[in-house]
Amino acid sequence: MSRPYDPQHNVVTWNLLKGIRNRRISRFISSWDQLEKLVIRVYRNGQATREDRTIFAKLQRQLKRRYPRFADQLAPYWRSTTINGEPLEHDPFLALLAPASAQAFVENWPMMQTLPAVRQSLNEWLLDSVTPSADR
Image: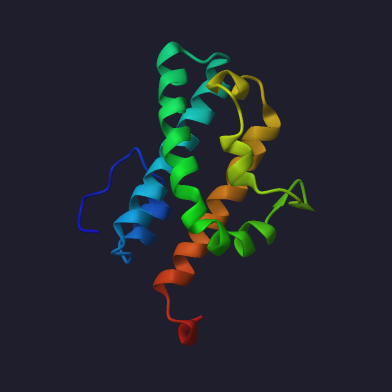
């Protein structure tokens, strides 16, 4: 990926993506970065604006379509993450896609706690994708 860093994206993930030439993966990660920012914004603001609800609906459609391609690859990564020291029993990606509206993220601390598990899963998956196994 030869594009310059875009502050819409997580900087660590963005740097890992430099070694990935797969556009499907890049689009998938970009959508997750946008969803993460939206969840945080809605939580912090204590409300979901009309624009937030529209953006969430768009991202939700995109990610529900794209996630199944990568779900099996990501499963071992999210299964090795924890929330509050407890192993995850349910797919955090699906949890973030489940709400009917962005309004569900208002004052929803459990959803906020899901974000680091997703980010860790994405970054470890990308790291394993760009690093030959002999080097790890």
